[in-house]
Image 1 (cartoon, one colour):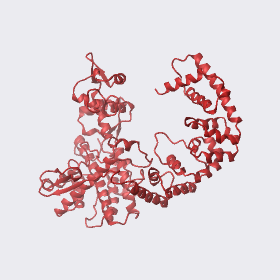
Image 2: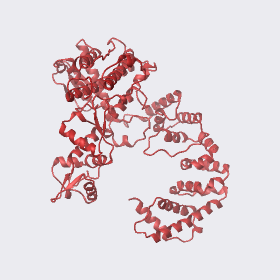
Image 3: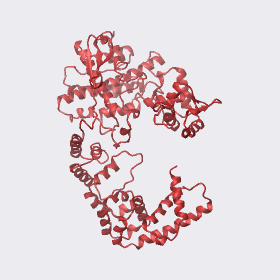
Image 4: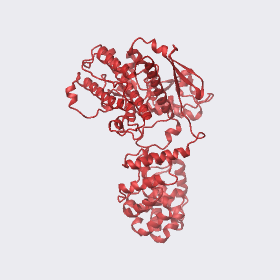
Length: 629
C-alpha cells in the first residue's frame, strides 16, 4: 500500500524530465530509486505497456548519465559530493558505486579519506560484498579504531533480527581483532548497555572467559549508574505460612505489602504423600489443568517494550511477568519446605517417597531406581548428587517408553547426556501445536487487543472480537467503515459468516477455540480432552492446520529446562547442572542455597510431567504400562 504514493512521485519525475546533464547527484539518484521499483515489478496499475516501455528508456538514459557523472569525478571531489548527499540517497550512492564498479577506479587513499570524513557511511558499505573485498585492508584498519565497530560486530553476530544481517566484514579482520574491538568498547567511558549485554550473552563471536567477565562487570556497572528507584520497576513478592490456617491460600494487605499466606492446617488435611505432592499443581500452579508448565516464558505475557527491545540471538527471552512467576514459585517451594520442616520432615524425603510410591508401587514401572540426596547435606553437595540422579531417571523413562522395559545394563553402556527434546511420551499425539498461517490469522483477529477488528465503536476500551462474541450477538453494523474490508477478508478466509440479518458468526467455532488455546499456551495437551473435542482436533489435523508431537515435553518446556540447567541453547541461562558438576559454581553459600531451590523446583516440574504422562496413559489404555497400545 505504501508503494503507491512512491510510484506516483516517480511518475512526476518521469513525466517532468528535462535535461539529465544539468542534474546534480541527488536528482540522478532518485532515478535509481525508481529503477529498484521497476526491477521488483512495481508499477502503477493505470500505466499502459507503452508508458512502462517509455519509462524504462528514461531510466536507462538516467543510468548512463549517472555512470558518466561518477566516472568523471576526480578523487579529490568525492568527499565534497558525499557531503552533499541527502539522507535518503546515502545508501543508494554506495549501491551505484558498487553497481558501476566505481570503487575500482579510485585510489585506496581516497577511500580512507572518505571513511575518515564520513565514518558512519561504513554502515552503507558493509552490506556490499564487492566493495568490502576490494578495500579489505583499508576497512580492517578503519574498524580497529572506529568507536562504533563493536556495535557493528555485535549487531551482525549476536543481535536477533527478523531477517539475517547483511553485513560483510573484511577477511583480514581476525578473531583477535574482533576481541580487541569488543574489549576497547567495554572499557570506553559510555558503552551502550544493550550492546554490553549482547557481548555478555554472545556465542558466535566466541569471546574468551576474560571478555565475558569484563562484559558482566561492565553491565553491572552501567546498570548501577542508570537504574534508580525513579526510573526502574521493583518486582517483589511476599509469602508466609500460617500453621493454623485451614484455607489453602489467602491474601493479606495490598500493593507492595501484599502477602500470600499458605495454610499449614490445609496441608495437614491432605491424607497421603502423593496427594500432598499434588499441591504443586492446583495450589502452587506449577502446571495447569492440561499438565503444561505455567512457569515458562510466554510471548503473550511480554509487554510491548519487551517485545521490540534489542534481543540477543542466544538469550532466553523473558520479561517482568516471567520474573514475577519465577519469584512466586520459589517462595512457594520455600514455604512448603518450611512446612515439612515444622513437621519434622524434609522435602527430599517427601520426593523420595513420591517417586517410589508413584512409579514403583502405583504405576508399577519395573526396575526403576532413584535416590534423593540426604536432607542434611550442604546445597552444593545436594545439587551434585541430584543432577546425575535426575538425568538417570530420565534415561530410564526414555528406555522404558522406547523398549517397554528398563535395562540398566544397556543404560550403563551409554554415558552420553540425555537431551530434554529427545524424551518420548508414552502417548502418541501427546501435544498439538500449529505454525499454520491461518491459525495465526485467527489468533490475531479474534484474540489480539491490537487487532484491526478489536477497536469497535461504542465499546469501552479495546475489546477483542472473541470478547464481543462472548458478550452477545455481533452485527456487521457494529464495525467501523475501515474495518469492513477486514470483515470481508475473514469471511473469504472461512473464519466468519454473515447471515441475512447481518449477524456476524464464527464459521468454525472449534477452530477458533483451538486457536485461542494455542495462543494462550502454545500447545494443547491432546489426551486431557474428551473424545468429541479430540475428534474435532483430528479433523483440523487432517486439514493440515495442526501438527502433533509425541514427546514428553513441549518445545517451550524444553527451552525452559535448558535455560535453567545448561547453556546448550541460551547464554543467559543459569547453567545449574553444568557449573556444579564442573566445579565452576559460585562459592557463596547463600547463592548455593538459592541455586539448590532452583534445581529442586526444576526436578519437581520434571516429576509433574512424568506423573502426567503415566496418569494419562493409564487412564486411556488401562493399568498396564508394559507396552504402548
